[in-house]
Length: 409
Image (cartoon, rainbow, N blue to C red; front, side, top):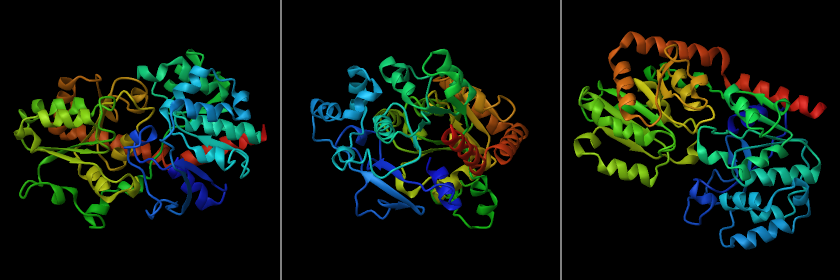
């Protein structure tokens, strides 16, 4: 969403207004002890030339008080929501009282709204603004249909209120239609994208970015292989399964490091502490600031220098990080579940594993560490795919075409 907004802004094809909360992690959406960005931060009002409207999350109200504020809003009735549905979304957050108090449902005026992502309360705010201004509202839900908690009918019922949905894969679209969550004619399929030039390995050779291995590996070990995970470090994303696979791998392949980049979780930290020290010494665990953007130099260097990228997740509507790995000419491993088998063509541009199967994960990683020819083939095919089909410019063009078609209706 951010990358498309930047491209629209640079093209002047749309005047972009961004509404978001001040949250920096999922916990902040619901709880006061989560991470938030302060107004003093230079990225609070502007990121990469985009003007940002951040609304502080209101944490000091009870659920009943929040529901009362919603129920006082006359526009809410037009959504025909069950009280249970509203309750579930308000619990998920983020609750942003300023949107009501500053009368932002009606001003400023918009032509179209594009919201994300399911199942959070910002979707209801987007729908309320759309109803108040009588304009179309689009949603890219990033629907993780392989994750059971996404299938709560009290939550899925909200999606019928949108004028159009964007599914990232045909598998996601088929699921939404099969479950009668929304009708087929109201769904378009537009995948994710990548700025593949940003991950060009030549940047490292020309010393335009600093070597990840030289920065983080022990002296004399920069020739060791590297396995990368980049994402939310939880069970759903497969981070914990990858941690459990590490002993199997190191027992058969000594000269390898494992790198985890992304927000951590208590479950991940607990599993990490449980690993023996001889395995922990081979793990680099980074949690970078969310505000440095998706093109953080350490992250780019990590993708370029990795020998295998692994994200065996069941909670991905697409998986942009697979595209980033391919752009860096790195082969990928994903889970054989959800949308991933549509994104990764098995044995063509990547390998698939069973979700939460650490031995299968270990086996596939060992294959790509040992078989150079296969490693290179999968990486090359993945690079050709992102270069030819999945640039952010191409994805933004498709989204712009959809906007204009909806506005003409």
